[in-house]
Image (cartoon, rainbow, N blue to C red; front, side, top):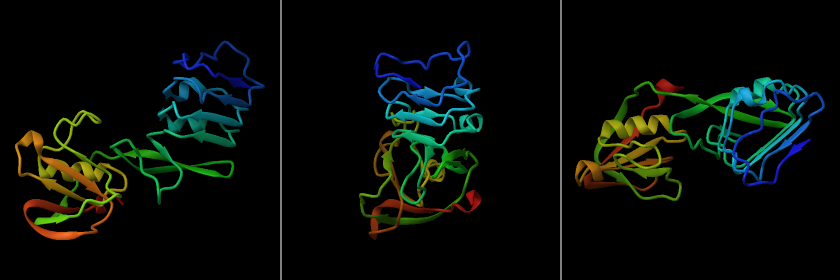
Length: 207
């Protein structure tokens, strides 16, 4: 069993020089490790339980292919893997639902990157009310992604790449740097307006 409760641990230890034949459990839940790749876990054929806690945000789903004995995966903050596509969304903006991985009695879904342009059915001067189910609002150069939506076309593309997004609004009343793109899961609260674009994203190319 490999476990660490040290928040000072920021890099996964190199196990290539260690006999890992009997290693069945890894727990790095209370560390500051945020990244875990397939190369870091390669060769752990007998690993049965992996607890990533809330610190690991980026975990390569391909790493699961190197862990044939894994029966349990615990994780709270992964950006590129989810368990329930009906209620969960990827935090990574470019992800759509990808490969399903069976781990014991669990099913985890990996990220399938989508970067091909899509078309959107537009409806001018219509908006939807703000909802608690909204996925987020972004302007140009949004801090979370390093880029945002300076135009309606970019807002459409952003929605197509964000898992769970079916509709979006683009508020172009202000300067380009202040234009606001809001990603939405539904069209609840539809109403006419003189200032907003409201557009339903056509995801047929992603299905």
